[in-house]
Length: 173
Image (cartoon, rainbow, N blue to C red):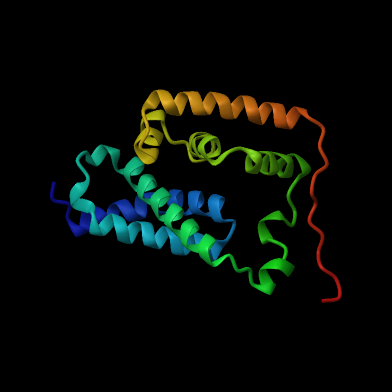
């Protein structure tokens, strides 16, 4: 299928916030999320001729984003360096977060990635089972079972009293 530059630009405008939101959820960094989103759109543009069904563009784009994120993680894991600034600075997104939201976020982080990603895509990014299936390249039944397991694990984690790891601002640095 031939996709025009104009059509692709429309898709970028339509799905940019979604992809950025997912990337930010995964990276916890605005700069990394912007870079990841840009790379995903670049890869999508280069491979736009492989899209068979324009109605499935959202899932297709999220799948490309997921692949870009996986590549970035593998590349970064081989470097495994952490800048001093990253260790000292409190993430802006957690400055005024409620304890419930913090507990949810920490519990989500404890889930295995294969369970967390479908949960985030379904509840936070409002993708359908079909779109998640396309994005993760797994059958719809797998999406449904992973969501069910993730809900159960998340419920169990949130029911268990646990100490919240509260971030404190570094003083006198």
